Length: 479
Image 1 (cartoon, rainbow, N blue to C red):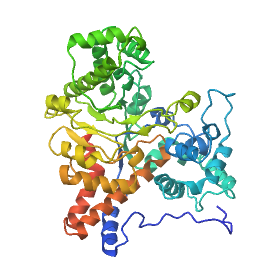
Image 2 (cartoon, helix red, strand yellow; image 1 turned 90 degrees about the horizontal axis):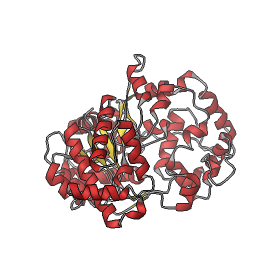
Image 3 (cartoon, rainbow, N blue to C red; image 1 turned 90 degrees about the vertical axis):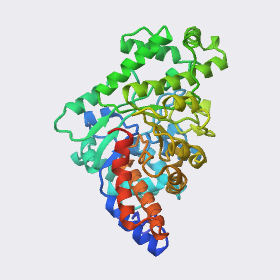
Image 4 (cartoon, rainbow, N blue to C red; image 1 turned 60 degrees about the horizontal axis):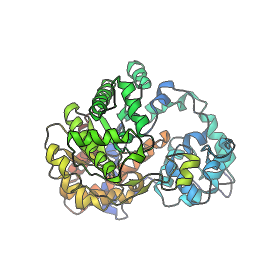
């Protein structure tokens, strides 16, 4: 694109994220180059399978790069940009939304607000490497950049399936409602022209918490999808088992569960049925203690099901969902106001792990947004229990610095083997390669630090880097 005299170049440095020390930097280059072009295995994400199955051109740059990315939305919102100005429909307004060009102007005007953040890192990498931009976004070049991006999106090379190949994605896991028909996954699996793997992930958070206003509706819907009466707790468990089997038939290897805490104390059959029956009368009928007890028992049952059917159990407790009620009411969930809570695993998971922590074939991947528990709880748990794996930093802590801290915190207790591989956790399709590149660079920097301090040979560092991007996620997620 045409340069202006005031434009700031957009050219990510080839040594970004590597140490300033020349010896460590040289080793990091070697380690990174060994895996830079390795296929991407993405075992946890939120891209819609229908996007790839339908393979329709993207509507515009903003709806691709800005509006679906809650990382971007929250930082712009924090700097005074309303979510209604970023393409999120306002339930309390007239329903009008700005066009893509206006949204792109908002991003460009606030580009400096992203300085030093991983979001800026991802954006610079994808804008330069995927879309060929050579200037940082600004108010002056916003229109020219938008036109450049919009034109690219009309070409065959920038349709979803072509980008899937360009990004070298080998496996992409989606996150799916337990009642989903998985038709898009079935179409992709049956299409001989599509060479990748897009796998569903079973997520049924709503059934865990009977105090949720939508709990009865969700329980009924799962029963209808399974053809099983869920008026009893035994019926709900049977319906969930049936739906899990359906997902497995469509390629699923994992579940994903987000709960407020990791409590897992089991209840008796009579207690479960009593609370279930009470909850069906409505949330007002429940005591808080019963709701918590039911949720903890469901987590125990979830592990029990994973031992039975082999699905990997991903668990990420400790998030306050929808912290700002006015934003939830106006714009719905996944709009940037989920916030971290203090994490705890060792005692809350003890009932579950005493029952299943050494069960053959059971995999429990623990994620957190409270990185203080990596060395205190998650690493030591993964360092004893065969079932436990330390999930990579994600969400609020999937940053270069946090990845280094994670490696230092977990490796001493659990080694590299008992980790998950990188998790991009994204709805923003085009950021996938940028995020994985960031992780590969951060891991190369950490491995290089072990080499120059004579804790690891360079050959072992290269071999470990290969395992982190390939063997480890394959084994952890049973791919």
